[in-house]
Length: 112
Length: 117
Image (cartoon, rainbow over all chains, first blue to last red; front, side, top):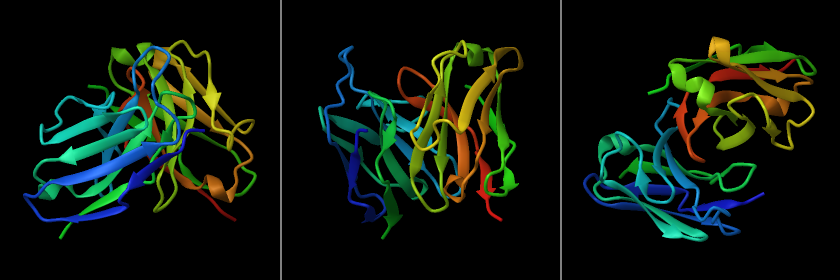
């Protein structure tokens, strides 16, 4: 199984300031079709997960442009340009290049 | 947009069985691969199972292989998860989700399964 490791596990941020979460896989996430199936999910308190970013850097429908993804191979980053109160929650990276689908441990974003 | 509504969760004794359902809105269901993902209380997300749009090629996490069966009824726009030989460690909120080009783009609200005597 591909192991996904996120850092930090907790991120206190000031409203309006940027935030960044890293995700590393223990093997390349490049699929045989040439795509890299790395996604980012947000889970607000008491809510199901919500897709933010897919294929490293593509924003899903309705996701604000303050969210952006980058990376390649085994190292990926989610950035929030200016944190808003509604961004509080847990963020997960997820790989679907290979079954089983695996997730990072989650990074808790909280307001400082 | 697809809407997914899970049901069928509840309290069950160890060794018991349960069938979860996931009702989907819209015509896109029959064309979508579907997944089950679970989340134990206070824990992270764990993939459970996947099924192709035509009901073929079911895959399972090792932890549930041989005990859980995923299936679907496209005429009813419904996904199922049949769970047998339940263990305490199966206690979790179970989510269904649609697969869209190797990501999980829509998720249901989840249904809680508690395995306890």
